[in-house]
Length: 143
Image 1 (tube, rainbow, N blue to C red):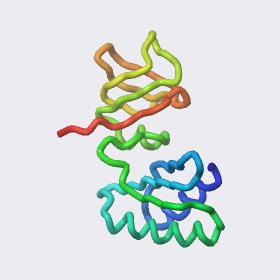
Image 2 (cartoon, helix red, strand yellow):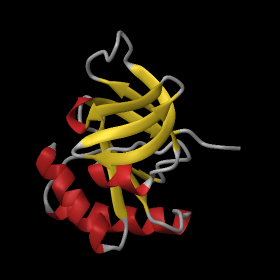
Image 3 (tube, one colour):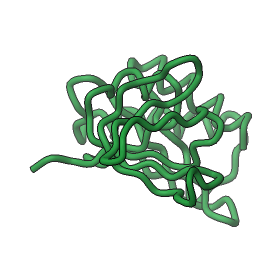
């Protein structure tokens, strides 16, 4: 899956977008690609990326039954270190791989990265979690 993700990232960034994440079904027949760009993703953006990816995946002989390309949504996942810098100041939900003070789920305001640790202001104070210890992190949309 790593090689496939790298190939998809090459295509997506070549078209001027950011690859957020790639998801595959257990049997490899469904491939979901989430893309983003600062001004937001349109249906036309998804269509352009889908057409290009379809061509590249066929040329590379990668077997899939269905390809879905979409925006990551308002509750965008934070995956890469750059995501934690880019969205500093936003409200997030974070789940750690191991408990921190008997707790794995946190909400708060993302402060960014400090010395390889994700920093979040929570109700109980500042939380520092090593980047590698973050299991999941998502933006919390404001309405």
